[in-house]
Length: 359
Image 1 (cartoon, rainbow, N blue to C red):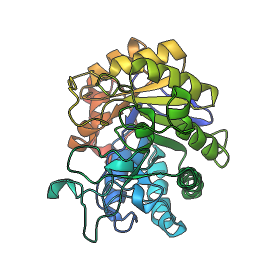
Image 2 (image 1 turned 180 degrees about the vertical axis):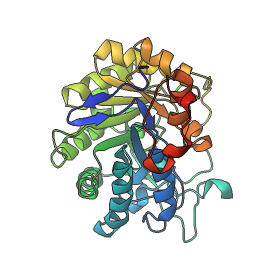
Image 3 (image 1 turned 30 degrees about the vertical axis):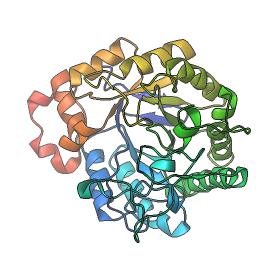
């Protein structure tokens, strides 16, 4: 069997393979509520054979949404539909995870297919918040600088979101601390110029994320995994960088975090990012092998053999598939065929399984 289709045990959760459906916003919710689009979108990836499916960035407060159509988990009523989605994913052999998020200064944006620009007014806009009154780019709304009390309220919101996620049945929580959203904004000196306990030194700039990890751990069972997604670099001089990420990963490991989902960028609009196949894999590799923590590789991973090579060379432990999964909900099934692995199909589809899918 290939390494891509070997199981991985994380605490009391066993993933049947190393393929993770990366959180991808669908911009299809109303007032944060999931609907049948989310059920079919996520459910089809479970039928497609992924080991773990992480639900899109799910806001812990309304103003933490990227757009007005983002999913939310800030009130109990939002849990009911999520339970249905989780149940379907688990019934079809995958593990359901959720990414808890706050968009910070990059919130209050229009839908991507409507241009995606930040909205300064109108019924679908609100005032973004951030560590400092620095907009993401020129011409955008200056975010409200969070007070200590408001920061503490956000920590509590992540805790409450994790409790609701547990009630919904998710088995993995991922904290979104990447892509220029709120927690990443606190990390980077390019977006955080505070002089209090949440700014200045490295220890202060990571404090919010550590506070959130500890708050979530107060309600999240010790036997279930906790991930953190980070941007390993801002790709900009004077910003957050690889060495910072290694140092952060070591702290998170000591705090009991199970895996670092290693992405990059998103905090500076004019960063020069050399995107291409495997361009972010070195971050997962460095963190994994210098810190000794599980990592996930993500970013232009589109081929079964490419994914297998990353795992065989111990550069990461999980492969996060994003846009390729949007193109092909059955990427795991097709990857198994390419690698010569005989994997289980849903009973409803077995009559279409050909011998060419077997070794």
